Image (cartoon, rainbow, N blue to C red):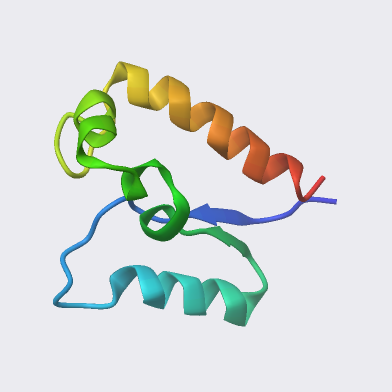
Length: 79
């Protein structure tokens, strides 16, 4: 059986509740949602963020590799 999973952006400006709106929409339609802002690698300290991100939005190559393991673990919890 197929399942829908959504991964939120790492960062979004605080003027809107964009990530919170994504979570609410996922809950409403029954999708699994991984909130990267609260529990993802972005939540770590500045040194880690500098090592894994090109900027506040885009992962660098090392960050993409690291995130792939985190996302795999997230997806495996629903299999």
